[in-house]
Amino acid sequence: MKDLYISFLFILFTLFPLMASAQNKTESKDGFKYDVVENLQGGKPTDLVDAEDPGYYNSFVGPKNMTKIHIEYSDIHSEDGKDVFLEPFQDDEFTISSNDANYIINGYSLYFTAIDDNVSIEAADGTAVTISTGDTGAALTVKNINASSSTFKITSDNEGYLHFDLAKSNVYFLKKTSDGIRTIKSQTSKDNKVYNLQGCRVSSPQKGLYIINGKKVLY
Image 1 (cartoon, rainbow, N blue to C red):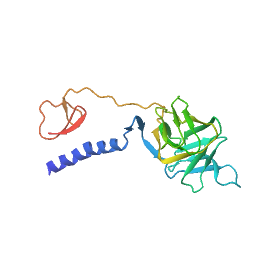
Image 2 (cartoon, helix red, strand yellow):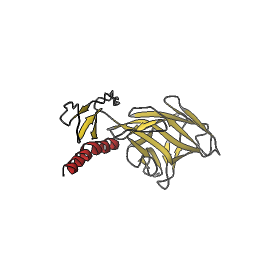
Image 3 (cartoon, one colour):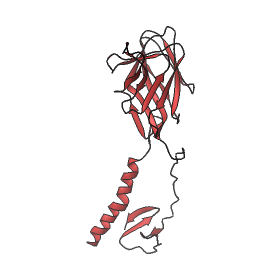
Image 4 (spheres, helix red, strand yellow):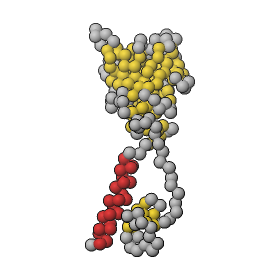
């Protein structure tokens, strides 16, 4: 019975905290750090430009309602609510922002294909990509933004259409902290000293559950 009780304590104090920390761990992938990633497939255009011309919008919102992409003068076009096209005016600026006040954007990768004109796309940090008609497309990838919003500019000679490939487009979000600073847990030095569950040093441990280097260990 005593051994069963010790096993129960081991599961309660060791495995459960590890499971909880794993659920809250900030992930890293392809240079992005994120707590939530939103793939834009299933997102929809919003903010109708003209009620009499229902295919054209000023904004796009992701399927989790976390990402919002807005343009002031150009159009986001969708006839079926699935395939989305951008019709940028010369040097019009797009704003990509977090639509959730609890999260900031760490970065994004937006995939486009040129339809009837060569285009260049440049983000606020200088990251740029050029897409030629007939190409399979390319992604504008921007990392380490760590802000609530960012901008990018699309330039085309004849204001041609761009296909916005939602299935290949992702936005990476970090959860805000109370002070705006994300901390990284430091590694503690190991001294291999043994303590009981009350925090008292034990020089000759017997069979049972102890704390060594900050971790619970079953002897």
